[in-house]
Image (cartoon, rainbow, N blue to C red; front, side, top):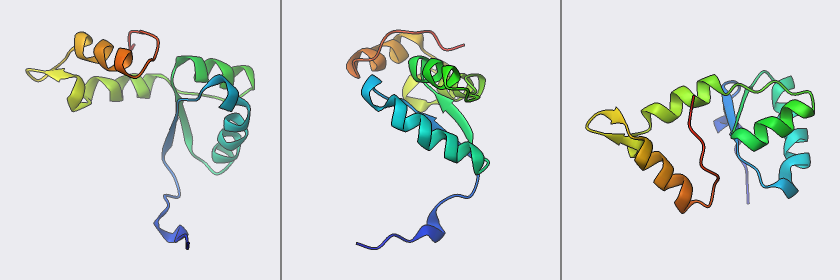
Length: 98
């Protein structure tokens, strides 16, 4: 297998949503991405872990992005019901964006 690194972005943001067993290695990867200039976004428990590890995580931008995901829209507006149904299907804890 060959990897073409020319297709990888050189900047931007990376969203992390990790299980507890993956958070330590994930924080090491996140630290390296930060060093390369990437912005970190994370779900609530991952963000809390990253912050405890001294990493800066933006949840404001993540929340803004959640509000515009088409799957969470109903009649052109954010639907909390659709969002919570998605979280439930994924086995994720219920949380309100924002």
